[in-house]
Length: 547
Image (cartoon, rainbow, N blue to C red; front, side, top):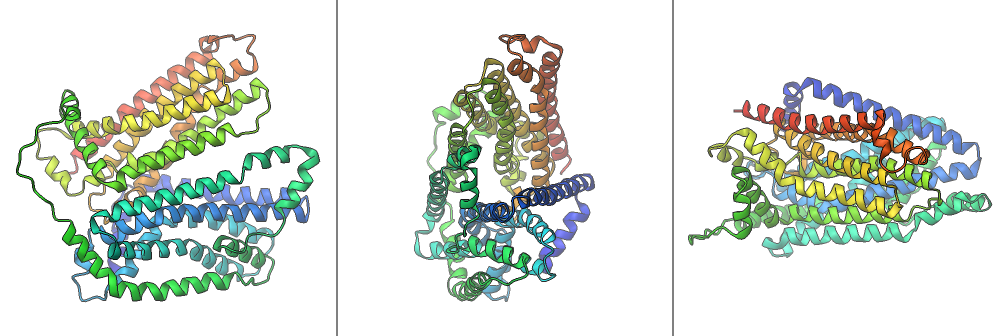
């Protein structure tokens, strides 16, 4: 642990100070927004009395359910990467240290990779709840503990599942089994969310005659059969000055996992790691192989095409990489189904404005995908990066190859969301064209930003791939990507607003012929060109100076 803390200290001292300052400012703004928004929501719902506060109580429980389900989804695959694929395991398990202590360290790293962000997002809302109800002093340490326990439970179960998989399943198929579990969990989560039919609840709440019944249903008792219900009820009762029994099951399960995990780790962890080493020996095939059809076509693009073929081959061989494509498909499907289920009134102007505003959320989705695909693209080369640099091509060609290899995936996802959501909402010509243009802009600029920032701030020595996206550079990428997506939506907002609210004055595509329309198109073109070219050039220049 001292080695890890010293490495963190050195990274903070030697890292980009400007980037850390921007990241700290964005984090402070996010905390302020969470606290201010929670207090405002509580004051508004409090004006409705007990029923209104009961709504916030159920929303809090639902939020904890969604976040804990997200941690559960990623816990198994993250645990396998951290527990068995970390680079420092060769050093740690060769020391005169008990295996369960190394296991405990790696489980802590798994929690940081899978549960740290949900924990940090939850604390400001819960602390604002304590401020609103003037909770006693012990509310804050209890809330801190309950939140950590809630997200630590799926991490602990994921770690134990990883150990069992490494011991029971064929070693060569562990990743495939873990991927299958992740797909099953995500499919179950999607089914559970869609089974609730939240759009029907919104439609009922929009009816003044049914609003009272909806509020009474929401303010009823919560679900105390699962950990998220125990956590929500414990926090709510503690805010009112009483200790709820839900704390004890959370604490008991954590203690049980804390005792069972070291016992299992001492018996199976080091043996499973050794099996992983034995199965990871490469089988060399001396027979010459001719280039396939895909490789021949990509070779026409030069060095960049050959590098893109290498990345494509490695991605398809690694199930933890190609499984992310399945997650992308599921994510796009959930988004489109939710868009289709929105209870929007049959007013063209209203539907057009809502359809355009949802483009900002598409940028958020694309940023979340980019931090998993584009930003780690160069860092995942690891030590093999220095082998690549012995080849006769420049750092700029390497960065461009990464960009060209990832652009089809990002462009397909962005255009699919833009086109299908526009068609499902029945958007007009101007709004649909603006959606396509913004989708292309986001795909180009966010992919280039991820590859360029990842090349400027690489982490070739990351202990496991899960750490790369949660590094300061990864968080900076998310912040800048969200900012770029919002700017692109704002640039074309005026011509879209004119075409929707004054369609008689601006028929067809005439809204783009106005000063606002021409300026927005020119600004979008400049943002895309400068953002794409500048990010790739800056990343290549920083990467070239790395040697």
